[in-house]
Length: 123
View 1 (spheres, rainbow, N blue to C red):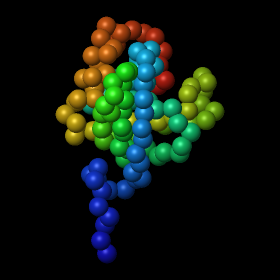
View 2 (view 1 turned 45 degrees about the vertical axis):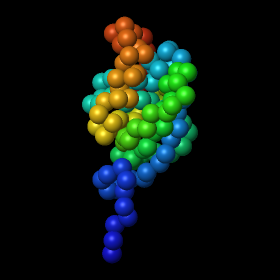
View 3 (view 1 turned 180 degrees about the vertical axis):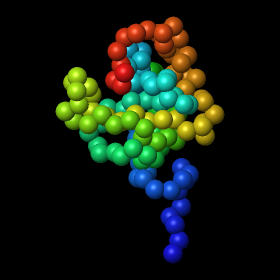
């Protein structure tokens, strides 16, 4: 019996492709998860994901026309009915396959705002 090929690496969990566009700095700040190794983003969604599910993210930032392809995995789930009226969605940790390109682009957009204590979708 053979194991299906997995272009994102690893075994198990579901693979999904998500397209996500962030058009303004405050939304980017609220979604960015700098406290996760390689960085990550919280993606509001009502689709069901499990921790460990592999995600291929096509990320569009601000007014850029090109999307950044980022492989990652679900490391955070906020279900419906979560305490504090949190947005429903998942946190996707960036893999090291893109060598930090997505994280650096996000940090460039958020320069100076990363030390803010404003609330975000996860903390």
